Image (spheres, rainbow, N blue to C red):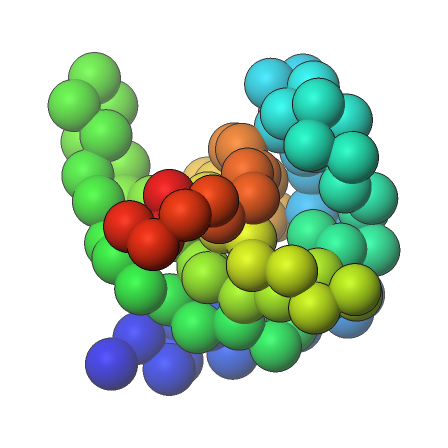
Length: 99
């Protein structure tokens, strides 16, 4: 459904054209994830939801995938006006409801 956007996001990860928010770094550390887990999710996962930020109107995307150790994870990203990928947050998938 969002194949073109996901292809662009994957290119930005492969070429290291992304930034991570402080919030995403904190959540990554809290869930014992690494940047390699986050990259792996984006490179191999799928966009499961598109949202619009209430304040800015920007679109953000939830990518569901796996860590390097095959655990479920969600990475929330957006494309910035500078052309970089912004990793907003990341969290492990717990339980049966996907969150």
